[in-house]
Image (cartoon, rainbow, N blue to C red; front, side):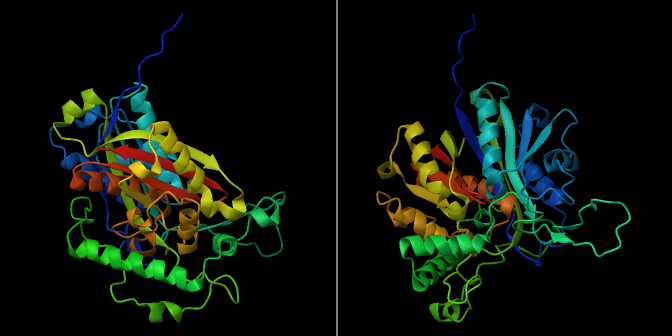
Length: 398
């Protein structure tokens, strides 16, 4: 007869990320496996007392995997960063939440006692995402063949999928705007606030503790932040998905490149690092939802994660919610009447900072941990909506 072992506490020891690059911008010349190796290496450089051989596993999220990631970008990052061969690596894919999924899986491995120390993160180079050419059904085709972009969205869709499930992500945001009566002006105002908060956070040095610029690239801050945008400028942009729609390039997240990573540990691993932790992981939850309303995925995921942690919305100090679209964030807020909107993304969100798909979840978890340390304590949630109808949430505390 076996006896259940107690779950171990899991600590966020440190968290780093690259500045987020624009599509075709400063980081477009850098391979995704090199971006991943950079943040892995940076965590170890910042923790000189830790023997890298003690890292039990490396978990990385990536939403593409069709190109230079070479399928298992986590293992590539381990090798490129110079870690011992004995350190393994696994890549996970939960689309936009892949980076947070990596954190959740790493935390679970530590909590269960499988490892004492783990690295968790995510990476995406949307600039370098390749085109793919399906193999023909029959040999020697005489006609033209179609290339598919792997940058974003659906490709090679199964004909058995109902068409309402495979609509563009922006059309899903329009449906959320319809459902909750969210206007174009409200979305633009939210987007403007995201840029203003991100610009202020950079000016005030709030990102200095977590951002590690990539060597040889002239990029020291997030490339998509627009300091000088305005409601007038946003109002001039045409709707992207409907002739009379409300979703534009200005109130949606851009396409981006970047990487992020966290060092996680139990009590024994924490002692080996010689460092004070940023935060402790309390709980997580993942949920599914109608794919047409994928942007509302965080609604139930956050509720479940808070319930598992024994806390409520009134206990929260901050929320890092991925801004795929302003309409999606505003839709979630409409379904969280208990939450003070002022607690959401106090340093700006993905509309301004950017959304390198596989990296964003790790960026959010790291940002929440650093903010908890800066505040001297509190409770935080990091959450993302996920294409095809899912939501993922993580609760952290200090």
